[in-house]
Image (cartoon, rainbow, N blue to C red; front, side, top):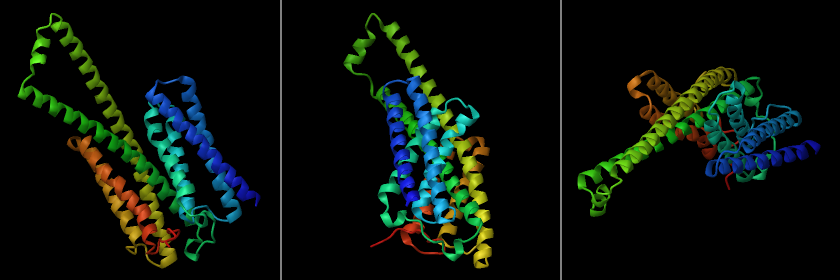
Length: 323
């Protein structure tokens, strides 16, 4: 009973603190950056990470197995993984860490919110492991897969942000070119006759150049973070699939069974292998590789939730309870 009470307390603490962190980040984004609030945000994420860690450890103690046996536990572990990724720049003392926190913090809170509020109460309960899961490979395989999902999702979101900014910029340039082709209006012509014409043109040109340079820098940073985080996730995914194949051979007598989960995991690996290849080809870097990563974003959710929604196959543990 005491373990369940502690688990509920830690769940509420982690969710409350990460909600405050989101509010702080919104204030920083819409108003201006306040050093004190920024430090509080970082400390809040550390407390959230420790709270989720304590929650998982408590479930591990009273259940007697690593807490990755159902969908609720996997979602909490996924939220914990987002918190881990959030702290990577802090560990490396990397600058521009706000770019990463803008993705990891909302991801962590949405994942935890769905786990605590979107699933039925029965799914929150720790259950006895089925025979196939009673193996030391459980920790290795499932943890690597979920860590890879977290990293790949974060990296793909950076790529999606890159595409949004790039396409908005291209649309704006297209519209401006069309306006120039159509011709300026009477009021536009009068503006050019203004005595301050040269000053206005210089100011507008300077401001436009500054905006374009800022957008270029932002796109470069998004591309940088996307490639770095996805490379980490792809490594975890490869380890997870290989360890899963070894485990499958021990449990079912075959390294690969083309189970729905295995098939979609292979598709996910293929997509991000293509992404890794595009990063080595100069002409395919940037927008083209970001498109591949965006496709991977959708594939991951199909791989993660698809089997749980259908409740079929050898990996249908912890599927949604359907009425």
